[in-house]
Amino acid sequence: MPEDDKTHPIPDLTGYITEGQTILSRDLHRKNIYPPIDVLPSLSRLKDKGIGEDKTREDHPAVLNQLFAAYARGKEAKELAVILGDAALTDTDKKFAKFADRYESEFVKQGLNENRTIEETLELGWKLMSILPREELKRLKDDQVAKYMPKAEEE
Image (cartoon, rainbow, N blue to C red; front, side):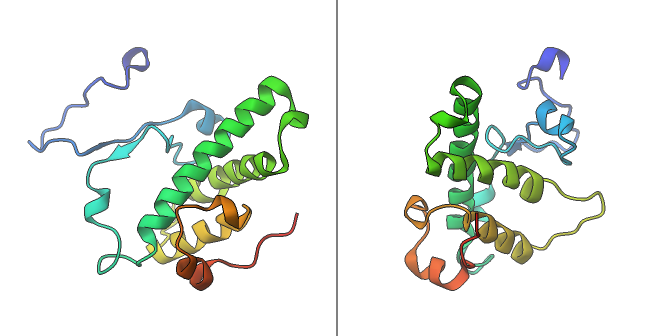
């Protein structure tokens, strides 16, 4: 966009109102993450209408919300480490920082010809959440954790 104006409209000849924003990140691009989508500021006004029980797997909304929250906290932990150093991070902060790195490199990043199914994506989300302490996963129901969470990853 001109001068990084993310509010600059993209011409749309379909006549439909845009129902979301996809924000690209130079930082992710420099890390060779494709597509370099900056998840936190991107949005979809329609996502809640197309996910969940009877549409996708019943755990989809909880996984989406938990991944988003964990990634935001992991980015905050990484920013804190830049300012104060890794020694200032708690063990939990370090796990969230590790989660954020792996979320970008494994979840956001996809091959040019990758065609990941929604089930594969949800399983990957659960795998990444296994990095984090269970008590920090407040957006997940116990029965979903019991059904989908793989064994916690080793350090």
